[in-house]
Length: 343
Image (cartoon, rainbow, N blue to C red; front, top):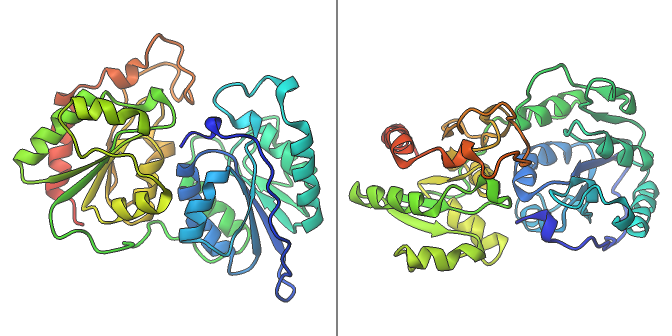
């Protein structure tokens, strides 16, 4: 699910005739599918008043098709948003970016919004010439925005979108999503052991020990993983571990779970979007910013580090904030949470 693995391409959407005189809204989210999952409730609220265009990574299409099909997607892998290579300006796809900007200007957006406090995002959106630009600017860079909603401190990502919805006079964005489908009749825990960044992947052998203990307590584990992890799971005695082949398979598998267990990564946010309670093992990031938006979400926070949140640019040989968490630290919290959670 890493955006960095995707080519920077431009596939212009079919021009549509807008019904009536509804204004157009541009929403930018250049990061991964977890961020798109967090965004979905805002998009649904925005569709009540606007024709909505999303500027996002190409693999956002799977979630939009499932949860917000009326939203138009303009695919864009923003080089400044990549985890690697983003500062190599000579290799940026300048022609592609120029074509995307021309496509955006054609739509004459009444407003554009983003929640990331990055001047690079704001400059690109400003070049699209929206009627007004709303977002969260860092100190000294808020002048790029017409309305800067930043008020200092950390803002939970779902809360940031809710504040933007209020500013646009949209219907209230719900704090939690309802169940997409009833949970399985068995006590099913879906584990997804992958992440787009290896700094967020808790060791698989430790997950395997959690699965062993869960089975002893009568839970039925379903193991999903990244493609490169399948062989390791087989070696750990999990022959049914598999990588979800497409977004619909991933969503359907997670939606049928009683609970979800995984890293600080996209599948956890997809679980929350499906209304499934989540337990997250954090490392470099902090729950105050990135915890899944579910009322029964629980987690174990990574070990202390003076550089947190480092946004996946670890200064050490390994992410000790994550690898320093052992099974005996996770199990009591997970066991207690499972006893109290209400599917």
